[in-house]
Image (cartoon, rainbow, N blue to C red; front, side, top):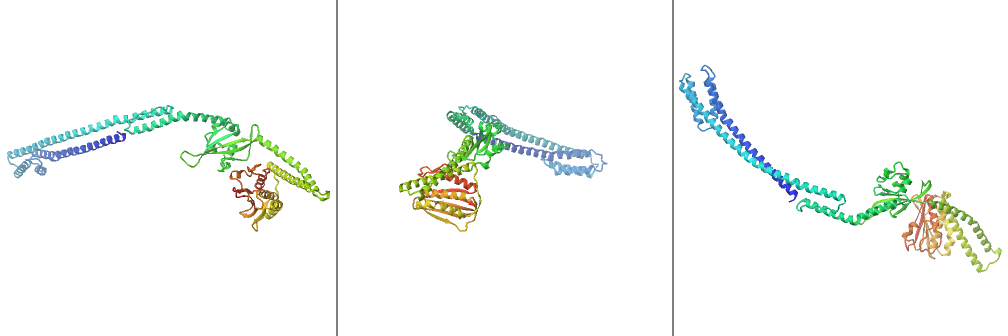
Length: 578
């Protein structure tokens, strides 16, 4: 039987027994009250009246109130006749009283008869009291029997509940508590066995199922997971790069030893605390964990920041901050769920030093190369002049080839010089108000010959009355020339390249649309990286032009980008503020 049924049945029976006991008590108590009331009202009052009359008869004859007292109590007795024969005797008493009242000197015989009748009434009421008292005793005995029986029943029900119910509840709970302690002690083989007819049977089934699964997990995966956890923690702590791990609520989960050394904190003051709380008083940690500087680009799992200068290893060191977002797809769900991220600081100090040396070398070499290349170009111009003699077609072809290679070398050295300016941060800007149309015409003039050689039409779609812009006209024109040069290079012959100028908000947009094969979506985010060239491209180049263009535009406060689809050509654009 289920415990709920036991409780309902036992308490229900006890409740019914208590109600019955209460009813019996009320019934017999009311009966006893009624019997007592009858004795008091019917018989005791009559005895009281008779006593008063007898006492009045003993009063002297000269007492003026004697007859009045006797008459008053005889009248009360007449109104309180309750027993058989009491009425006739009361009537005789009235007659005796009338005789006494008429002749106060009546003989003693009347008085004796009067007293005898009073004693008869007294005896009748005394007998009635005894009889009614016996009835009350019988009622009390009956009430006692019934109440004892019902009380015994209540006692039996309560005793049964007291003996059985705590045991049926406490024993399974105690056994379950012991089993839980065993499970907590990793004794996953522990099982509980209760009767299936009670609720504890369902608990036992669920508990045994849980223990079985825990035993299965412990035997299969748990120990392995713990070992792997220790292995990963050891691996992270032995990595040379500082690493900080956070959960989805920005609570710090782990900080390896190298990170603690760099940020100057202890593990107990960092791990387990929120990023905001842990970074109080530590500007470096606050700058690393500040949500405002964390990457928000969801299209890439790995996001890189600008190098951070930190005094570490007894010198100024450069670190590259990398934030890796962690997302998982829960079992049975379709969408990924963000569960945290960790921050990696890559020590790029050696690379920074090498990069600085490389930049200085490139700047020096490029500057030194410009002079001999310029001399070669001047010598070619002299050879092409008729003043030094006429050259045959084969010589002319060689001179043209040398001239093209010279122009290419000049362009490469120019790009390398621009790159050295970009890398050293020494870009010299000449910001002034200039017309977008002037930049357009200068760029068109620079690429017109190249376009004519491939029979490519340059279509200009420029809005009228464009506002004056604040920019470095030379560097902006250089970027537009680079866009046009690439568009002509990658467009087929007899095609059209469209140059678009339009007003958008507070900026002017310069855009170049070609009809080449386009850029795969995998490479769009890298197209402006240094030295990057789209794989499979048959055209040669340094891979620096677009990177330098990006630096030139962004340093002026503008934006640069590309829109491209495979087979639909590419649209390169940049914006400059008006």
